[in-house]
Length: 537
Image 1 (spheres, rainbow, N blue to C red):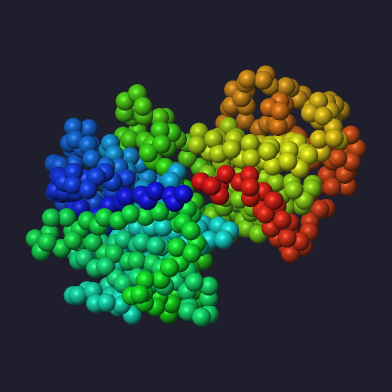
Image 2: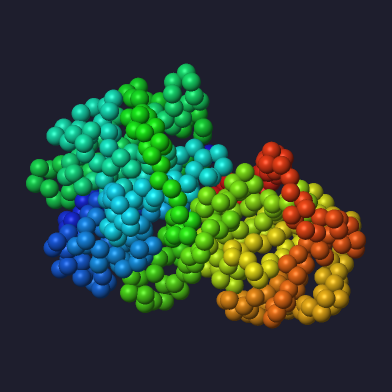
């Protein structure tokens, strides 16, 4: 059965004319039925925004549809966006953030980049730089089997978008817009790309994302520039369309080419951009936010004033912390060995362990930078739980049970080590007794956490600890107060009492060639696919 399409409205520069915009949206919905969301590009606020905006900010008025907006394009409107990483500005009006990916529960993927292009570093709060674009690309292109995104939102037009295409009227597309946006669009291959700022409406002919007869056919891209709300020339500022998420489409339907499809306008500019690619600085802020469906209760953004808004507003979600120096496990980091990644969800991903104890030794890792389980936000915890359940089912299908452990000591990024043990080799009681016995030998106090308790009830954020969890739900905990053996978890599992692989207790002695690691990852990915909920999201 085909997936139901989402009904979406896109809008150009609002410039503070909220009553005009939302009045028009209400009229459209009255005639055509309800839409799922409104996406606004360009200048959402203007020089005369304060009077109308005050009523929405105070809750006296409400947007008639979930509305998602980009950030400031000038210094005058920066103050309207109190949190650079995104926040709820008013009920039903959400600022997406500076740059990132909004990934709804429906499967729709929307990439956004706020601001205008700026050549120097550091870029002002209302702009983006080459480094911003490169980091955003890196975080997305690292996804295995990346094919493109559903929607791209930018305020500036992409430079050269009119090449090979129908006329853009008075707009000179060779001089107008941003080269960085062109490079981003060329790399991400959005099915729809919306922009504004030029006070003009332009719907470009669709363009292809492959070279005919040389590359496998891919989906086409459509660029639509929208005019400003309430313009006297009656230029189009609202665009309605229906879209089925790429991940849910039949591959044959996805790559169908309309008769008026043109060549890709960015091929030449993309090659030039690759020659002058800006270097990345891993010590700077995380490159991207990864969002979930904002209509879900647990996924709502916090109000911009930081206060709760009614009984149904959830607590402010914990944010990933900033890294100090390069991180080997933040998915957006260039340091990540991406050939080991086997599954990517919305908030977490799975990767084979480097120098694993066994070929199917995997890690559950948060995409953002969190140091430990007790630091995780509720939505990340929820997805960790999903991966645990999927791995339990996967390993049980192979006659194994898993043992999970975490060492929050001398580590920077949370790593949940998941190691399978044959069911006929030892019981969960044998595993538990081995951990406790070897802990006692090393004068480590390993305590059992009560069945219905959680690690967050016994450890505060910042507390060093070692934690073991069996797939039966049994848990062991040690509060680290001094020194602690870094390979303790592996040493217990590698011991003669369990896996009998003492020579593999130290991961550095288990290093394999990159080709072998990649082959193991492909094999695991193939076998795990029927259990991978991330592929069905």
